[in-house]
Image (cartoon, rainbow, N blue to C red; front, top):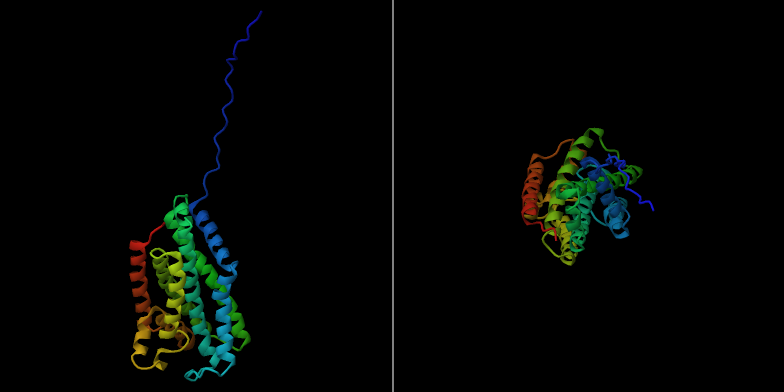
Length: 266
């Protein structure tokens, strides 16, 4: 009776896999695309970010219900920059604060922070996602405005881009501050109330000098007023008021610091 002896021939060792984690750049871009799609595929968010600004543009330029002093400019030339500023506020602040707050409540932020994307990558992705949504917003508003007769001076476009970027930084910081400190249900209420107050008290859709009394000075100190004046100045005058830049920088620094200190991931 023979007994089998174990083979001494070494077995082949599987080659180590060369496939590793995606690069940081690819991870951020992939998450950014997801963030943008999440907003654009949501019917409620789509209404707030695109439909309402377009409706405001059409209503304010094609009807005379609201009397507005355009300072000699056509109604469409005067109103379009303000509507662009309103669109930036809706995407960078309202949509972002609500989406981030519910992600935080559902544990998504805590989970994503432990992935290779990391906290820094997640925040970067959210900012890029907001900028992507804003690009869609501004493209739609521009097409509608041009159809209605808007003929912007090309020289003002680079300055308007600077104003939009500064406004996005300020309002995204405010969104993260709210989303990271309040309960999701509270953010849902507070974000909408704050947006209405910023539009009413700030010189978003009209210039600050048309507001009554001390309100015109308050408007210039608000991020909404500074953004409205900056975008309007870029397109109407070919220059951004220096004070508006200072205000936007100041709000971005203060709100960014607050969000960094107080933001809770769960």
